[in-house]
View 1 (cartoon, rainbow over the protein chains, first blue to last red):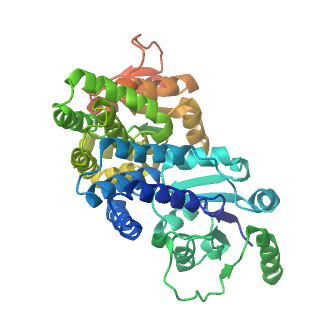
View 2 (cartoon, each protein chain N blue to C red):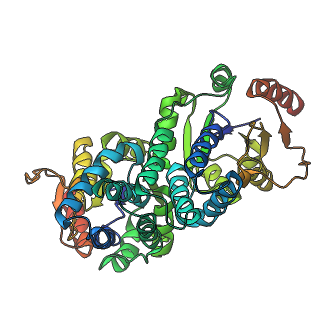
Length: 235
Length: 235
């Protein structure tokens, strides 16, 4: 039934948002002498959104946004050395261990025997490649697509390149906005596995999704059973 | 004879290094109260090389390296507002107009009629895609490959993906290190068109390259004649 099953990477295959949350905690501590935690969070998010158009997704853009936020929130009073700390946060993020989510390392090998698997992720090309290599999961994927944004057009182009029709394609991910909505829009199947934290930007609207091609699971461990059920129905 | 002709992008299709040079000039002016121009250049290059391993290539990594350099060269004395200027440099670079090199806009359409053309470039995924879109040249290329690094293995993987043998592949670029040496190493053809400035990191060793599969041109305008000559010889 499925000619290609693709996985989002950050917070679907491995932990990611917790690293951003941890860094943001360090950032708040750094700015504590200047500002309340809540204004810091809000200002940082605003700066990130404004800067997406300049810097795209990923640690480097996030870091430049932290620096810009720090300067604005302190009216330029923040010191060079304090900004140096923010660059250290970035380096720690880039080199942080890549921890697969519970069940991923056990489930992927079995799936890879029955289906061609792909990773479709956005973010820094350099960093995503490094994380995939460090994750130890690279060999399970026939294709790796690192894209600058995930919308219907981008997914359609990837499927065309691999000669797969949307009705033979299943996407698995944690982000309603990037992994689910665009897939349903182009006629593919989508499995949502929520991560315990969702970056505000990635949350979809709050309406529950109604589609016969949409499924929600709690863990990747439940994916093989779902695929079996779908095959049985299709057969 | 050639089943695929690929072009590097920065300083091959459009001006790029001059934008980095211009930004570096603004950076030196910013640090003038603290340091001599020569120590600034040297320290920045050292920082960039050290940080490649963290941040890869592109404007965002370059910017983080400028900020780090500014902090180190001023012993942390640089102000938040001055660092804010460096972030403005980055935004100006990202949004700078993309200027095709002389001859590119005239030569590509003719080549695209006879050969499948590709772009193979490294750098920030997000930024390179934006530049290609803004260049107006996107339609001439059947494939666009944005990679995190250019070595023989990366080129080999691209050629395999497109079912092209190295002896049927020609790469055109300005960087001996990234566009020429790895191509000759895997058995492809390489055309070097030097740009008037070469980033120190991209310069090859100084030995002139000796290979029957290597050619040096002064302008992309000379490429059609070279291809004609090579076809005639092959025929």
